[in-house]
Length: 342
Image 1 (tube, one colour):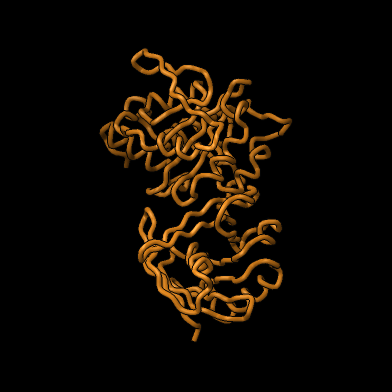
Image 2: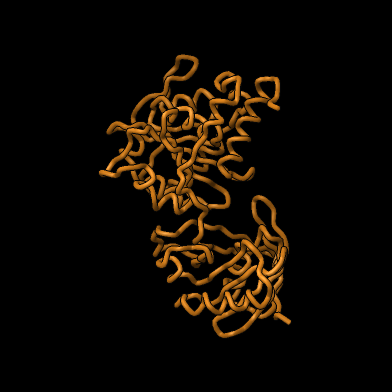
């Protein structure tokens, strides 16, 4: 049952939409709100979704697009076709339909920050009290009748810093109450692009500190990163031949496999992956079998939410036969141990 008071209801609706989108509580959701004319956000900056995905750590940020249904540049027949690569890298897309505005507003209501073009969706975000900035020259009419133009420069090499600064702006969830409808019906119509899928290949950066290890992952199924640090990881479910062929590590961290099947899975996958140095396969709730190309088998132990980084830490540490590290991240961490498989 929905809460009875307006502010708790607005918080409840926002949390519900974030769950629908698959946004974790610790993640920041960045929404790009774009109109359809030649001065709209994505008409002027069509590569902005890909740039944000390449620059924002995927464990800490999610990126979504709330577009006008008339926005189809480049002769594409659908929004999903236009943004196919970005969707494969984790982009969330509000699918335009008969009630596209309600769908777009539902996504915006879940946002931590909105980058727009001064159109209706940008003004809606500003009316909710969500940190809002524009990447074009239009002005925002605020609820008080004032006009302001928050500067957000898309070009240049400080995009990540600007996004972080925008997210750090004080958000006032209670301000959602006047603009959010009294019923859940409008926001219940939320729809995502049917091609949305989890990121199955990424670039991983590992940093060793005093007694602790931190990491950052960036989606990289089709995004080139020749000048970036780190190494490349591909999930066993990844269907991109290009991504698998350039992977330094392979990982199967979803459903656990019995030891014999895990060994066989690793051998088969490594046989068809020319660069991969090892493959980690989940064998239980807190354990992975790490098989190297040289035939060595190691046991990795850590919390399941750390599986995606465990083999990367081992690789960055120099592929030791034994080791213990303390992994840390914004949403928590825990110990990781490596030893020979008995």
